[in-house]
Length: 166
Image 1 (cartoon, rainbow, N blue to C red):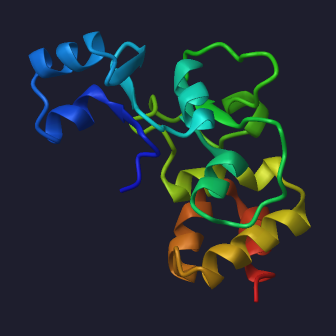
Image 2: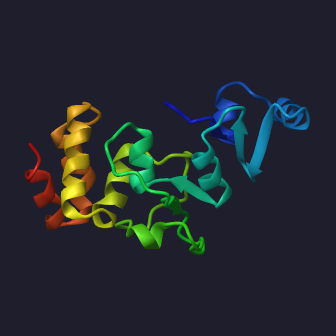
Image 3: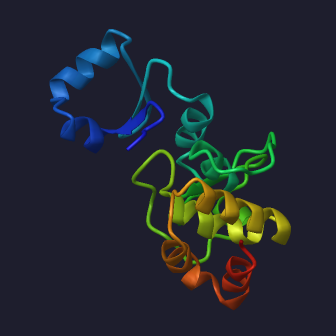
């Protein structure tokens, strides 16, 4: 799994870091503490760092772009925050991107691809969304069945867009 240089304390623990080693790495400047429980390694993706500092995970079209999916470039950052998080001005958040259901707090710095798709289905216009779905299939990131599963909670309109894919 690509972390884009940003990891949770749980991910670092799983990689073998003890709490003491983590504190030392932060004190020595080898790892940067972004917020409680989240850290950036040297060379971390700046947009992923910003999303985590804002209290969320990179998602929607910003997340899709990190997976190599074609989406139009934009200066707007799409961030999915935990359900209790307040919307941050100038950043697309859970409310701005119309994430389908009230999801749990982010566990990764970049949302998993199926969650990015669910966040993007209302945020992108129809033709752009279909092009992104085509890109996902062309890159073989997800099968058509996996895309169907990712969109199943989004309603019949999202599934109709999937049927438009080549």
